[in-house]
Length: 470
Ligand code: SF4
Image (cartoon, rainbow, N blue to C red; front, top):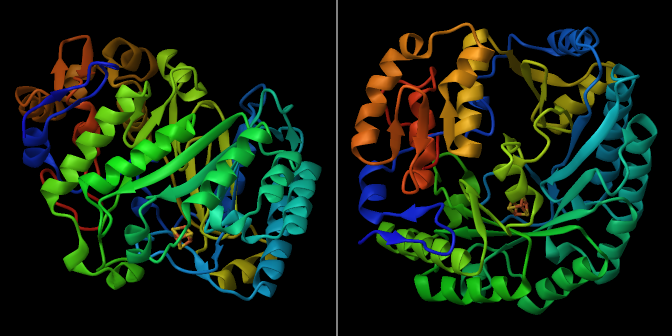
C-alpha cells in the first residue's frame, strides 16, 4: 500500500508498508513501568508512606480521582476489561457500600490536600449504578474531597448508551459530570451482533443529542477497528455517522484479539475477523476521514477538534498520558478507588486487588485494598519522563532531560541511541544531538520508539501478552 499523506492536519502520515514491516506486540504505556511489572512486595503500607511523602513536598497539588464500577449486564465479546457480568443489582448495592468506605479512607488520608480538579468514572459500566446510587456516590465523594468548580474541573464518565435514558443523561450533568464518553464501537448491526453488543443507532444518537442539550462541555465517542464483520465499507458508513454527530473527541481503538488471555474473545468466530490488510485499510480510512473532518491527531488512538482541551494542551506541551488515556492535568496525583483500580501518587503506582471478595475482606479489616505496585527508581522516573514526552508531544529535548536528571543523555542512553538508528533509517524518528523527533509517519508507531527506552523489555523480543502496536 502506498503512503497516504494527510494534508488537512499534517501531523500524522499513514504508511502501510512501514506498518506491516514494524508492527509488533508492545505496551500501550498508560504507565511506566507498565502494570505487568508491579510487584506484590508493594502494599498498603508503602502506599501510606507515599502519601505521607506528599506532605513534605510543599504546596499540595490538585488531585485526580478515579472510581471503578466493575459491573456490566452482558458481556461484549471483544472485552479485555476487569469486569463482573451480572444482572443481580444487589451486588452493586453491596459494592457501593464498600467503595464509599474506601473513598472515606482515602479522604481521611488526604485531609488538607484533598483538592480535586479531575474525576473519572470508569468500568465496567459506571451507569450500571442506578440514578439514585450515582447521586449518593457523588454526594459522598464530595463530602471527602474538595472539588474545583464546574468551569475549571474536568469530571468525566464513561457511558454505555444502552444503559441510560435521555433523562438520565441530564441527571448525570446535574450530578456534576461535565464530560461524557460514549461507547459506540461500530454502528453496523452485523458487527454489533458479532460482538454481542446490539446498540440501535437511533438510541445512541438520542443519547449524544441529550449530552449536548444537557451542556456537557465535551462529548467523546469510542470506536474500535479490527472487529469481526468489519470492513472498509462498513467503517466508512460508521465514520460518516460519527462525524455527523460532531463529537469533540474520537478514540479509535485497535481491537487486540488475544483469546488465549481474554476468555470472552473466544466467542468471536475467527472466520469473521478482518484480514491484516483490511485492518490497515480501515486505519488508513479513519485517519484520512477524521483529518478531512478537521480533527487533530493527538496520539495513539485519539483524535480531537483543534479547540478541544486535549488538542490545546498538546500544542502547549501540557498533555499527559495516564490510565484513562490522554489527560490535560499533568501535575495531578491520581487517587484510584474500586476493585482493580490503579493509582499513581508521587513516584509510585499502586493497584487494588482484583476480586470483589478480596476487596471486601481488606476494607473490612480497615485497610486500603492495595494488592501490588511499585516505587519508581531514578532510572524508572527518567524513562517515564522520556516515554511521556514521546507519547504526548512526539519529541524529546535532550537539554530538558539533562536539566531534570543527573545524566549525560548520550552516555546514559548509548545503547538506546544505537537501537534508534534502525528506526531512524526506517524514517520513524530523527535523532540529533539536541532532539529526538518522531516523524509524521512515525507517530502511528510511537510505541515502537518508546519500547527502545523500556528497560523491562527484552531487546527485540515479541510479547504475546501485549497488543500489536498497530
Ligand atoms: S466492553 Fe465495556 S460494557 Fe462491554 S463487557 Fe467490557 S466493560 Fe462491559
